[in-house]
Figure 1 (cartoon, one colour):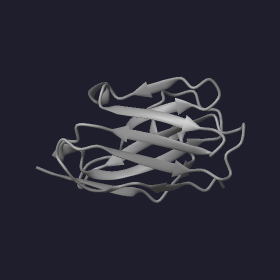
Figure 2: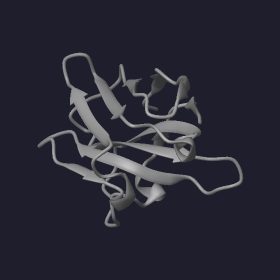
Figure 3: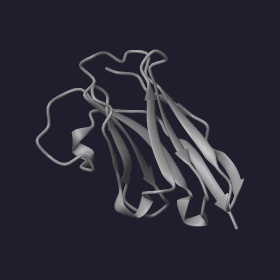
Figure 4: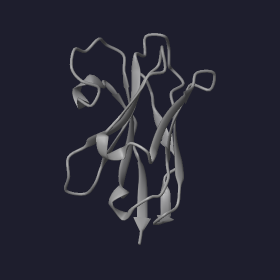
Length: 126
């Protein structure tokens, strides 16, 4: 089991910025991709962004392009999600996830990810 631990969430004013971190101490070359997903109260968990750990390719939900940036630091075994110009609708629990098995579906398919962190709450006030 790959342990994931998110941090960096908090309460911010609309228009502000946050950078979430996901530490994966057990990260290995068998970790194919990592992603951030979020879940607002009463809504389904949705994919925000993903990064292929090998080549560094990134993918974003169409509605989040431009304000969200996913990145990784392989030495620190950490994946980041930077969010700028935060909006109240960004309020959600943000989860880090990792894929360590091959999967034929899309990057935004939650079933792709077989390791999950406990989440970090982001609350944006207007």
